[in-house]
Amino acid sequence: MARTIDVAEYAKGVLGGDRGVLARAITLVESTRAEHRAKAQELLVELLPKSGAAIRVGITGVPGVGKSTFIDALGTTLTEQGHRVAVLAVDPSSTRTGGSILGDKTRMQRLSVNQNAFIRPSPTSGTLGGVAQATRETIVLVEAAGFDVVLVETVGVGQSEVAVANMTDCSLFLTLARTGDQLQGIKKGILELADVIAVNKADGEHEMDARKAARELAGALKLLRPPDALWHPPVLTCSGLTGTGLDELWSRVLEHRRTLTDAGELDDRRRRQQIDWTWMMVHDELWRQVRESGAVRSLAPSLEEKVRLGELTATLAAEQILQAFQSDSR
Ligand code: GDP
View 1: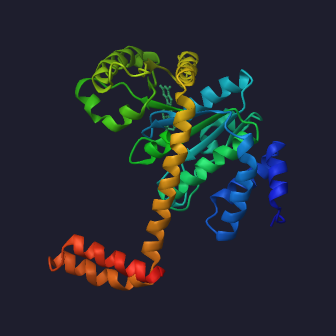
View 2: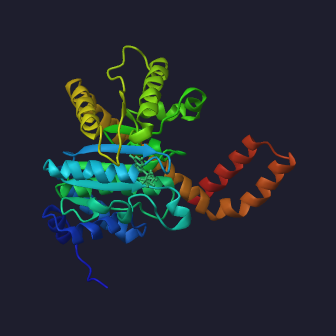
C-alpha cells in the first residue's frame, strides 16, 4: 500500500511530469468516495490554470473499426514530431463488466512503451455520467503534466460519443467502407457530431472500396449540414495499419482547430462544455439523491405497480415521487 500523499504533493508530482503520481492522481479523481472527491476537487482547482493547452481529439468508431491500431500509429507519429500524447477512454460497458477494452495498453504496443505517451483505460465504475466526469477531470491532470495532445477513445454505440464530443475540441469518426444502403446504418447523430470523418482500413484490396465509400459519405453529409456552416467535415481515407493518410488526417484536425480559433469558436465551445457539464452534474447528483431517498424507495414499488396496472397515471406517480423526495430532503 503506497503511503497517502497530500494535495500539494500530488500537484507537484503531476506538474513535474511524475508518471506514478499522475496515475495515482487519476485514481483519485476516479474515486467516488466523499473524502477522495473533496481532495480531487482541491487538486483540480490547483491545476486548472496549468491546463487547457492541449489539442483534445475524440475518436469514435464501432469495435473492430481499428481504433487501437489507428491510435497506436497516429500517437507514435505525433510523438516523433515532438508531441506528448495522452490516450484516455470512455467505455460505458466497462461499468458493467468491470473491465475496459478501450485504452488497453496491450492493444497499443508501440505507444504503451513510449516515454512520450501515457495510456489510461476507461474508469470502470459508475454511470456513463460518472465515467465521463472522471475522464474530463483526467484531461485536466494530463494537460497539467505537460501532454499537449489528448486522444479520447470511445465506441460509436450509445451515448458515450456525445459525452466525448462534449469534452474534446474535435470529433474524429472512424468508419469502414460502406456504400449505398449500408450508409443508412451509420447513425445520423454520429455524423452530426463528427468534425473529421475517415474511412479506415483503406489498404491493399480495400483501398478502392474505401475511396468510393468516402465519396458517397461526403455526398450524404452535404445533405445533413447547413451550407453556411463554419466547418465542413472532410471525409478522408486512411489506414492505421500502414500509416497511409494519417498525416493528411492530422493536418485536417489542425485546420479544423485553426478555423474554430480564428472565429473565436474554440473558446466558446470549451466554455459551453463547462456550462453543459455543470448542469449535467446537477442532474446526475439530483437523480442519485432521488434514487437513494428512503421515502422514494419505500414508495416506489407500490407506485410502479399501480402505474403498471393502469390505476395511476405516470404524471401523478411522478408527482408523488417528487413530493416524497422533497419531504425527505427537508
Ligand atoms: P478497435 O476495436 O476499433 O480498437 O480495432 P482494432 O485496432 O483492435 O482492430 C481490429 C482488427 O482490424 C484487428 O484485427 C486489426 O489488425 C485490424 N485492423 C486495424 N486497423 C487496420 C487497418 O488499417 N487495415 C487493415 N487491413 N486492418 C486493420
